Image 1 (tube, rainbow, N blue to C red):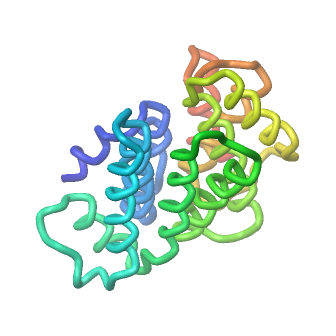
Image 2: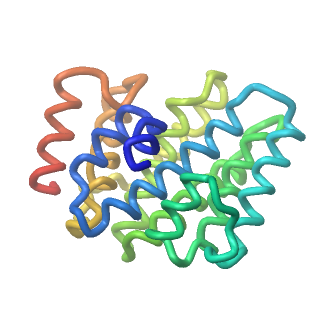
Image 3: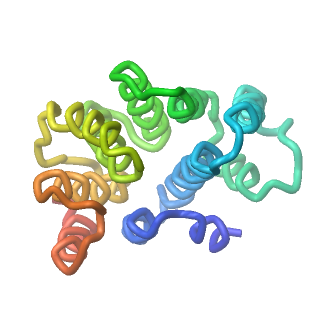
Length: 211
């Protein structure tokens, strides 16, 4: 089951997850796998109303007690074991739903980033976690947008962030790697988080040392 969920993640997230310590690995994987599932719903290319229905299904599950979740869904099973208070993930669903709008304005961009940031706080807390999660969320979104105008709008919001080197606790090592890759991509003007040996070296340094 774990391997199946890992395979749903983008490559950069898989790499970052490999540095997660054992005590936070399951929760981090569940968080990233849910994020990837919601991304797939929004970016599926079908009718917006169908995507909204699928997002609503996940929203309904997250307001339920985990013991009442239906059986047979591997992601829910993983979340039941690793994220016992899933209500905080509703904002993640709400954030992804913002991307179904006809246009992506600054309010929608900020709600999306807030959704991802709140979700990360189920794994670790503190101002550094909030800032690192928000900055990664913005750059990662921008790099996955197809329309140049929307990408530039998100990058403008991201560029206004402080982008200090994150000092995160060990259990947030995955976020440290993702934030470092996002910081590097923004400064280099790269089109992807993993753009070659330099990005791999950054991930290795952050994954081992955390800074």
